[in-house]
Length: 397
Ligand SMILES: Cc1cc2nc3c(=O)[nH]c(=O)nc-3n(C[C@H](O)[C@H](O)[C@H](O)COP(=O)(O)OP(=O)(O)OC[C@H]3O[C@@H](n4cnc5c(N)ncnc54)[C@H](O)[C@@H]3O)c2cc1C
Image (cartoon, rainbow, N blue to C red; front, top):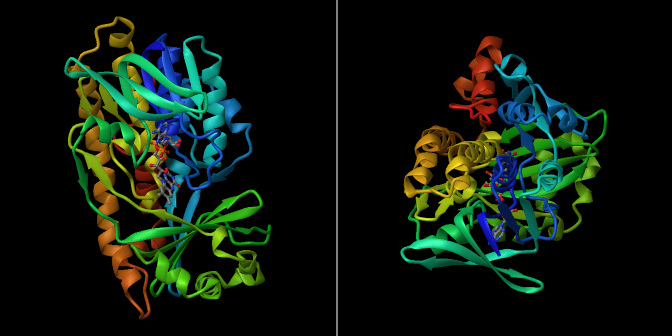
């Protein structure tokens, strides 16, 4: 198959880039290794700056008609103290809230719209396996499909295949790994109308639990020290129930819905980035270029912003068949700084907040900066802006 651009990975970065390039008249093929977007361990937050992108595409009203929750405040509880720490009502964007929507609904929505464009093609159950390298540049890729091997030749291969990117490994792009002190146990418990409000971060000695409200259930993320999954499981499911109840006693008997470890998934947290995002004929974006920690829930937004910038910078050279390495490097130049700012914040939070909390057995108290946020409503606009908009928001060209 011959195309202008082949994208490995149908996550937020790959689907948004595919949609935007096809909209700009570029022939594009997106390969997604799974049969559908129905995987559970993905973030669920669609940020105000991504909603601005949807508005610029003329899709916002239709998007907001899909079932979702709107989050205007974020609250945390640390030990005995509780505080609101972010208020989205004043972010300088069209929507002054964060949308909570399962990521598969978001991806389905993008796929539905992209499929209406004549130059877009999405191939599910197609796993990129090998880059085709010719004359010192990447000239396409091979993918495994149920029907056999697929060979795609293209002016550009984009690695949007996430944290364990095959494209970046095959391209030999150097990775800088920053490590993380935690992994995440991911599970769900049913939700009742009388439960406390949305997105509740709860912290106590040695434990952190984030609860994300979805229609009739809570998506729960329990942070555990890195590499301790086997030890946690060895203590038995009863110990997990106790751990959760210690943080959210109001769940009561509902923790027993977690009857076995097959209902609890381990998500290994990684924070890394590429030194160079591109080589001739190949570019990485999203988590493939910079794996994000779940802290702040900003990875999807960054992946989308990368895609918006890449489409704006690359559509014309692709259409005019004059794509050069310098064009690809411009994407990195544009997106690297915002990504470094966010990763810097995540690494600081990991070291100053999460590592000590997971290591302690004693009582924990609300850190001073969260107390300040709790006390002064004006200050709560700052984290809301940082999470919801971020530095250098991108706009569709
Ligand atoms: C526990 C946890 C919770 C998180 N929560 C949030 C949150 O609430 N909000 C938030 O914004 N971010 C969150 N993040 C981060 C967020 O998930 C990522 O930053 C974001 O999904 C990156 O998008 P992406 O498109 O670059 O990659 P991904 O979302 O990883 O998508 C990559 C896609 O490529 C496909 N793929 C992989 N390999 C191949 C291949 N060889 N061939 C073809 N297809 C392939 C995958 O199936 C996948 O569909 C969380 C991360 C973790 C670990």
